[in-house]
Length: 617
Image (tube, rainbow, N blue to C red; front, side, top):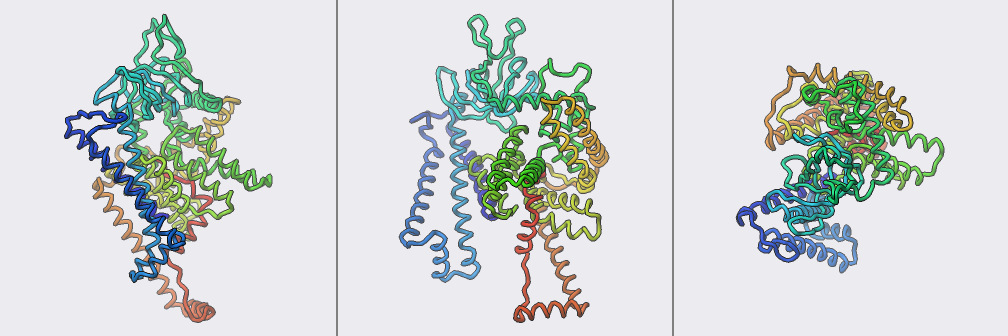
């Protein structure tokens, strides 16, 4: 499935990029004026005509292939195999024909999904309403994330929302657009899962993952009201139409209670404990002014930026976000408890899925959380079907299905880093740990192997983001490894007990801050302003160069291993005789296991520990 994943990812990314370029070129040729045709579609737009024709051609090709298979009264795979054996193909091509056919099918579906997703985004009613500028609208929105601190001057908070209905410029239109809502004062009382009516300014986003910004005007102090209020017959800029569900309301209250407890910690604890536990740094979280502690000042923005840069230069930036280790810990605890109680396997599957969904809902949304949640559910499904876990296969199925449902994730660096780290750990983590156990203690060999495996897989993507290589990343990860799990467990327990037992939460977040203090010290020493960072060319060229360098290093290491084994067989007659005797038992035929077989064995054995582990964003 790995070649199919690469084909789907490349096709989805290319389709979205080409679509945007063609769309922008057509808009530029028309002077930015788009004439609306049937159902609000552009009347003379090249992409608008080519996309349906291309999709129709794909559907016709797929239908023709299925008719051909049915006429032969064979399954599609049997037809492909018969085609490969009847036609005089070269041996390599004949063996790869089923894989190439599957890759072509996956690429076709992924490309179609990407084009349709891009077409839905650019032809949304919000795009036509804006028309390249700003417009005053009344929108019905649903909040999809907790309220966070604003990253714009003059605004207090921000929330990720999806627009359901728009009214503006004399039009009333439905919408499916995703937007980032900025508000001040009482507008920051939004809760995740709630439905709201908002009056504000809608415009194209200047940064961030959302396509639009919806800015709510600041209410005057004389007429300040609650979001539901109506004063003097005039509707407030924001009012609640439907309250969030009980589960969403409880999780929001739990997150706020946890954040209030972390405000009593020192500066590094206020920043790192929420990041390690819920995936949001302390300076990025939002608490209403009346719930903030008066006797404790928040950390300064300069210190927060300096700490974030130190974590980035030292190569432990993934500790500031939620990774698959959270889901691994929760899944392990739930699995051990249910096995001790001798719960049936189907009930274990349901319990794992429910715990995975609840944990993901309690975290702040991110691409790495989505990857870990999806992979955890695939692992639970494999458990329910009674199949052995295969981490690489589970990752590939998870990523392919996610790219089909959410094609924009193909352009997400966070999602790419998460998948690449899991792939590197699943393939190289265990063999590296076994190779170093003879030279290092096990408590050092395992984290060092995991770090190098994840770092090797993610370096080509990191170079695209920042043209530099952290020199002390392995050392920093080895230093903090003994404290990460303990701090994470304390943080998660504190989050669960934030509402029923605030005193226990205060103690647990204090213990977690002791672990994050070690991380802060390691980042400051190894990633401070004078840290050694290796320069590297950026862009696709630099990424390709480091990928080729890693492949060459891997081939060189394999060559050294093979050479040493041959030298050992030649120098030790006993080893050679034993090998010959073993070959004689198999009829005189020496059996050699290939690299792919060894990688499959290593991946299968490391499933329980590595399938949900991620390097974060």
